[in-house]
Image 1 (cartoon, rainbow, N blue to C red):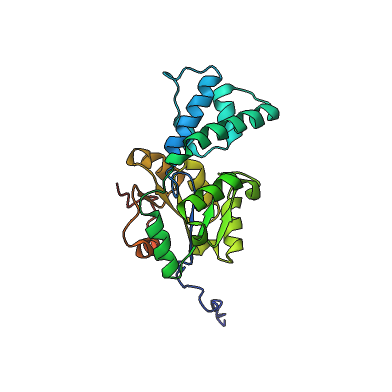
Image 2 (tube, rainbow, N blue to C red):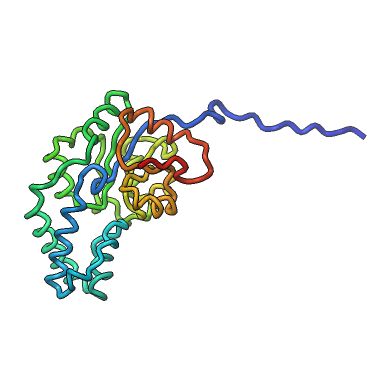
Length: 248
């Protein structure tokens, strides 16, 4: 009886090729801008105005990356769209009054400059509104460092849905597998992983565990001196465990 020979299908060129780093996508709040202290001041003042006790007020929910409506509902209970709009405007006023204190996160200007010089595209994908996003970047002189900027209004579905990162990748014409995301929130990490992208959790060490559980591939509390080499290593890392190389 003749034995039928079965041949494996030939793989096309580059089928086994490792992904190459083409782009790094940054969040705004807590990643590019050291804005969390200012947001915390603004939210605390707003919530106290609504009758909450500042002494017992726990603001940890702010750092999970939830949209504004979810934050208001968490602290105030069921809320109408009109009230979300009104309280949102008030929160923006409170934030604006303290915005003079706003600074970029340490090493962000140097990191963006290095990536640009090495031919790595930088993009921004944030749940923040368009006006505040551009005002912040202009204040820092960083707007032109980003090849594309995607804001909350453009993304449609908020993080942890992946749309905001997929939209950024489409705009820069880059395969998601060739992108690394830098995020500081659980929702942001989950969105990046859902988009098929590697993700670095960038936050204080006390928040490493929650970002690791969300799926971060690595964890850092400060940006490395050799940014290009670092992000390339994150993209090509083989570890099965998320955040295997956590660094304080």
